[in-house]
Length: 284
Image (cartoon, rainbow, N blue to C red; front, side, top):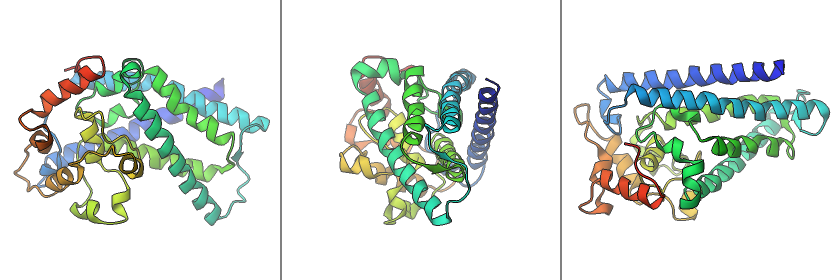
């Protein structure tokens, strides 16, 4: 079990390093002329940080166990972690892209399932207690949700031979996207949603809309493909993104609060409606 604790310590170090860096980035942006990029201005209490970090530590045990299973399986020949170092750069790039695409599809459909009213309370409620999330919410899940997310990796390595270098890059990429998606600060340029290439990727605004209470929208992790194909992208996503990224430093209004799709209903009231549909109440 000593190998397990080494894996856990490594995941723990990455979590705190990346979440803290993203948190400091959000604070820094909020104190500069770019503070208009802060999507929402709701205050975050210390109890939120304690909940997010505490639950993330629990879930990191689950993710570390998943990685440990892959390592043991690889050493015994029933998992396909390639440590030979013989894969070419082109082969590594191909496996990396395939892993991203498959993981994004896995995440989209499991995430959408978690929002079914009969599943939400047991699988996904904890993550949505972070109405205004911070980067420390990156692993703040209910245990059953963490198990589903972590199960992707034994399933993947049980089928696809993957160079260890690809795994290392994937872990860094996925964690970076995860913490940035929970900063509440949009760092991408305004033309992102109008660029044919960049618009294929999700943004902080994309995921922040989901946390605001728009539980029928924006389930994707890396890409916008599935949301658009299945009609689950928020209809005002691009409009909100452009509004957030065009603010000057003195304009710190809440862009999402002007949701015309709700007509005279505020985003807070709409959030309550969404929570009720999921069989529970807004934690705030």
